[in-house]
Image (cartoon, rainbow, N blue to C red; front, side, top):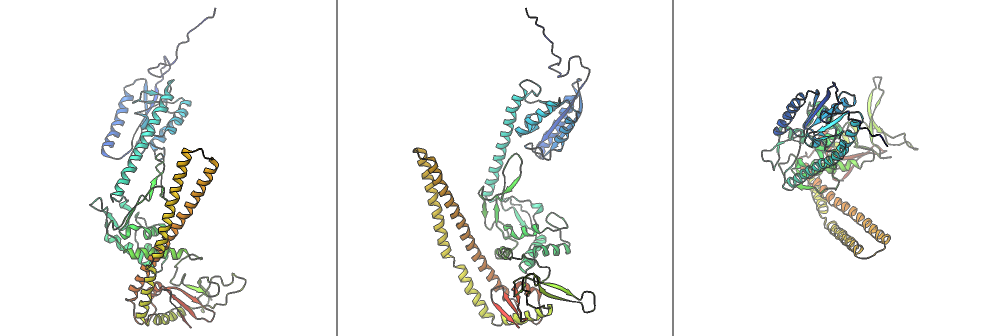
Length: 527
């Protein structure tokens, strides 16, 4: 007959310590709140005080530390310094037991919760979730933890969806959401719906940026000019980045409009904002608040960005002739070259930057700064000579550009075509759900519809862009006319401002003549 013996347990189920052990269990507590609101701050302090008392009242436990995080989300482990320090100490063997209020305080991410508890369990570190009364060393501890962690993650997802809905509702109602502290030119308005009010002291800087850009200055040059003036960035830094200036020039809020939902949080677990490329609808509100620059000037800036982007050799404005002087032989830019740099005959002349980079050397000549300036004065005086006719020609061109009826009809036809394809796809899907169609044939037809729809959408975007471009060019020409009315009838001395604003490019020809192309497209050749 078999001999059966009962081997007694070695661990006290109440204290979680070996029976008859004199060793005290080293215990840490973790407290966290996810916002900085006053009521949450009170909760945070209450958690800390509670766990100090909770651990002190158990003679079999000794306090290691109270690890805390304040104003931090629990959906991922990034930036949770207190939590990460606690896990590092546990891995180092400094902790036997971690006590926390609930699973959601520990982490709202199911994967993080399960993987960490398993790792710590393997190292002999237990976690006690007080609210759920779950010890991870218990036989059913992991099952319970998996269920509870999943519920915590789902709760976090629901909160995220509610926040998204709230933001969208505010956007639809016209409420803007911006970081006022880093928004150059605007302060927070007393009326929450308007949101933005002009800060006149900073608005001067914004207008300066637009003015210099439209005069021909590069974004990089504008950065240097701002730094030389000692003007701080929107983030109150000394160094201006080109991306900062470019974003100011492209931000529709400076013309008084407001586009919302430009970005969105793709995954509620990592809280990373990504650009909205059409995944979500956007809300655009015209005349939302007081503008700093006119709509015309904003449109002109966008057109100027496009013009510079189309330049094959890039754009810079290290001086007023950069990207303006062009070689008549190869189309490359002229650049400043220092001749006789070490003797008394030192001089600066301009020459094709790629003169010797081709099979045939460019035959265009050196030109001096004085030559360009004196010929520009002659070209300007000839250009402005019949101001009345010049303005009439510009107005005729504006009428041509404003007439987008043909493009509008094309756009309407394309939109109808896109809707027709959507109907065909819906019919196909419905037919597939009610009839026994060949699935390969179904997929082939579906893919062909999808491909055709994508092509039409691309055409719609292109035609829409053409309409916007024509309207912007019309605005640009109107601004050109307005500027022309303020220019002198006769230019007696070179003026950098007139040169930068009126001249698109100046082509240096082999015979030393220069062909000046003005912003309205008119060309004047000066020998």
